[in-house]
Length: 178
Image (cartoon, rainbow, N blue to C red; front, side, top):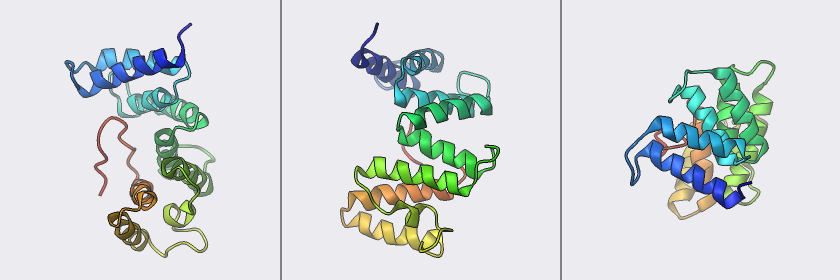
């Protein structure tokens, strides 16, 4: 079988095809390669497959399949998959999943992105006790610290913007959330 390095190479090739980076853009080939990596337990690929299904890229839009793949990626500690799953929970697309479960996912994703435990509940789930009273106050605070070179605050600022919007984290492009 393929080792992890080979699986990552397959995923990276698929991502390059999707973005048209150094190769002619081909979303169908991209999906096939990324799905292959996902079936070999590649966490980033699992989250990416969810994004393909959610957005209807190369495949028919399928919310159930998107959720399935986001969950698989989240279980493998993929922050993008966690954030996208949380966004769908917040938008009401996951039966019986509430704000608390979404906040827990966002907290875990923020910790993964920051590489160290922070207090992401305060920045990502503003409705929870002890958190800033509104997202814009928290966002202003984290942006100010991010501008001073605090990488954790930068990640927190990004996660907060993602959490406060109902849009999915664009796995294959730079964040466009404002």
